[in-house]
Length: 501
Image (cartoon, one colour):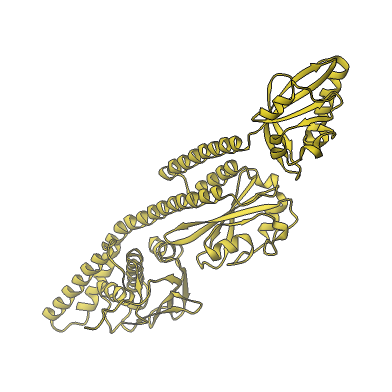
């Protein structure tokens, strides 16, 4: 049917795309806006079947059924109403459109006039608003979590689930960074991940991720989020062929170092989304604060318990100092003066314990002060190592650790006998000069034997030191005496020297 004078003005003046289709589904008119939206010129479109031209494959059966029902029964359910659906462009992409259809009958023939408007921008704005609302709920939930008594693992799991919901990615995974900063340990999966992706979970458990290895290793190495749009095309994505096409991961920082990597997987290919990466940074920082708070609470608990513990142990130290001062003394006044000096040293050591807000201090000075505070002189202990500074919180814990080692030596070890000695050495870590190794060795005393139970002092030497220094603690009981080693502890470098005038 030719386009008559009634329809032509509509095509020329309409602000939307206008498509005219006859009862056979053939395009009879196609205005300039339709060319812009769908990519087909009027010459290309007119004469084509509309269902094959701009209707996506998934919607074509419904389109053909509706046209057939109108031709057979005269029933049209979509006339004179607004619909939102997807349209197919010439390049094969789909766009959301708003559609209204009007029936025009002229000279005994019917045509359908469709008015179509591209609503991509509106949909994007709605999606962005919805995303921001979900993100706000997530951040509020994390803030509440940080203020609660939930564990760090519970916070991680809640974060994985929230990001899966926020980004519409089905599977999330958290890996914790080991103390050596050179490896990652698989820790938690999002709720339902083991049933949604059993092969992925199993494959991950069998792999080791070091710096630069696989997706989480790349995040650990760079400290930056990583997005892989097509995992099949990435040679460093180690978990190929498990049903996922895209993945992204981001780091979680606490105390200036990466403590965890969170990764997520999508069954469809996803291009990088800047807003999601920005959200990941904010979420990573929030979870880092949760970790810092839990860490501070644990250290604070250790320190509070130590105050009570020291009140008991100090008696053993004083007893040992009294034995050293008066045991073989020939001059009571001289012995009394020596004893007083040792009591003064304990007071100086306590000053170090309260210097939490101070600047970094020399490791050697801290050790000397702690030894002196316990009444251990240069005739019973030797120490040596490079000049290294440590921060205030690590200073406190090392002072406590040396105190515990001295107390144990007075009670059971080398300092309980007249001939026993202690040797203390530290050096930069061979594999990483930003870290150091510390060793305490006893000799000349009774053989060391492992106690039946681990007391509070051992918590300081192991858990406390590892928490504060980031190193790894080991205790060995040998016939020669106790050996204590802390490897890979953090330091802040050599002392800064003032420029010469």
